[in-house]
Length: 412
Image 1 (cartoon, rainbow, N blue to C red):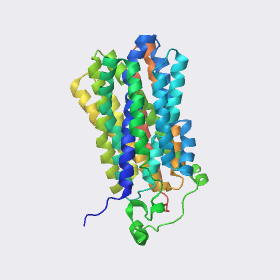
Image 2: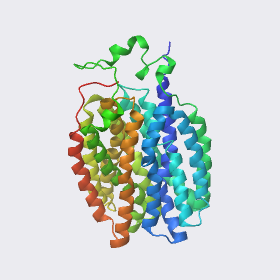
Image 3: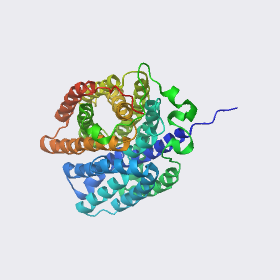
Image 4: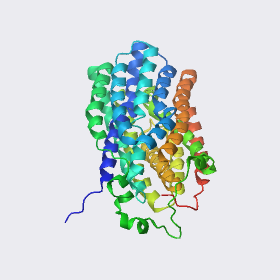
């Protein structure tokens, strides 16, 4: 008799598909709208980059609040209302006639994206897995990585129909895909007679025993969490990581255009970044389940640093290959390991709050990075200096990750 698939994997699939669409349209796809909007309105790179930073508020000001809501009400409701709000936001953005309306539309999109962001989807998955958390988060996050496939599609739609019609199509697509998938989400396995990883109640304790470590049934409280130095190290490293990632994602097409590459080629490069990150999302997620997650995460920061050095000379084809080989897996792996470390070291009772605070802090870097890169280009006409600075900062972050200390208590 064929063994029934653990329902947690269906949640992983639903969250992965939602992440695929939201990531493709809102996060990775925005770079395709950058130049058409600039050509129509004449706004500066700095002004448009600020809008991208406002879009990142779902990982910023809203994240701790969303984290509290997901712990309180569950992921299902947030994803449902988030998809509806994103659709309205994209359609409103298509009607933009002023800079104020442009920013206002992005604020609405950010509000909706808060309900579909990694805070919510990671929390949904973390509730259903423990020993396989790295693999589960890796599979889920790979959906976001695969969203790079949407960038060339968005570029083509803009070329054929214009950026306004493309936004309307994107908004309607959000409703068609996201609303049905939201009904597949379930909050906790205990409500259905199971425990994380699909264990029946009779097998729970033996399956969670760790080598030489007593299993504690207590959860870390929120107050205890914010006092931990290890949590602070992780937050600082996340701020630096998001500063780098957001700047690269937002400015990849304008940067390549400044180097003389055709728009189609630049769109292809923008799509390859998240696609190649799937290697890291799967690979480092799997390695994190086998080895110390801190060392795995330190490797991700190291190869991101080397990738930024290659990014300075990405117009050379063989250097571009090394950029994708280093930066993208490091970027993808760091996303997965961030959640896996939180789940293993601090438990799941306050996971929504933990990932919300971590991503909220990281969004400070996500706001600074694109805006700083845009300002520097407006000022000196080149991106190379900021890429070098980001490479150095990523290398320095390795020491922060290695300082994270594992608790003697194994939180469930």
